[in-house]
Length: 200
Figure (cartoon, rainbow, N blue to C red):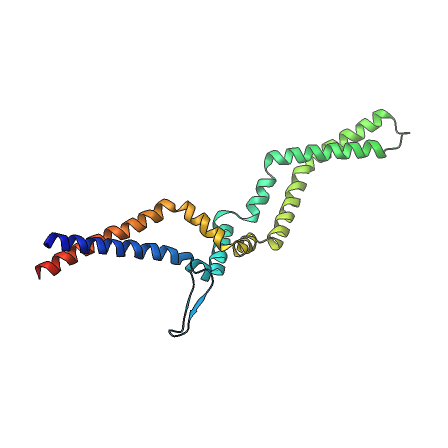
């Protein structure tokens, strides 16, 4: 009888501990919309739905300050190998325009000298010009484009049911462990309580 009572209290404790953690995990998301309890004057809403705007703001700020900035994106777009490609494209474009616009009365040899001279100017000044332009673009982009605001708006517009599914799928194992841990702790507490009740 002693062991049966201790085992029974342990099982009850395990069930309570497990259910408490299952309920706590559900409360992270549920209820999605606020529910008012008039008698107690309380409003119940899931943690993430309730603080969605704060979470969105925090994610946006963290991504922009800690992970990636508009300057890094622009720098990545205009890397050293890209600069040489840009210079080649500029040279080709200017050569095509110069050949098309130069009067036909200009002898071929002089045309060739002019085109070589244009190539040399672009080669010499091209990189500095691209650097100056990229700096201007970065300054303009940083003042106009805010990564934090883009991410914040995206998170705010994200459907909560979808977000819940994504998080639950990613953290399925960990959440299951939390539930089982609740059951194990509950079992231990129930077991200790059972022994204390039976002995005293």
